[in-house]
Length: 122
Image 1 (cartoon, rainbow, N blue to C red):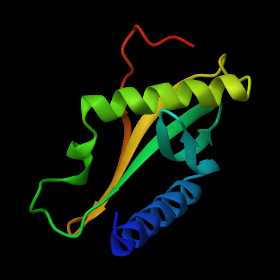
Image 2 (image 1 turned 30 degrees about the vertical axis):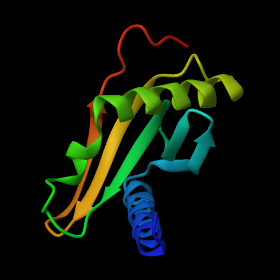
Image 3 (image 1 turned 180 degrees about the vertical axis):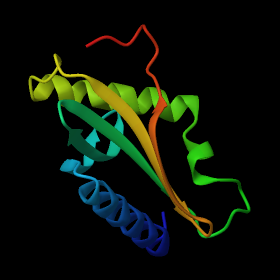
């Protein structure tokens, strides 16, 4: 990954964090890494733990950023989220998976962007 791409990603994650805080959502962690993958932002909205993927695009050439969260990426996010929940003894809390996409057309926050398959259990 190039330095420019990393910087653009960090900018998008900062923007997403500000977006969440402005809406009363508390950011718990950024760039949470596990052997199974990384979660860009982990937040809490009331009692719900929110796992967020951030996509930052310079152009619409490859489609909207939110379309880049493929089923494979979703599976990795869910597995990483399970690790986070188990490590912090939060498996009893409701969870949600969101996408924040920002690009030339503006920013969009997609709460409940996807739901984990039933076979993923905590």
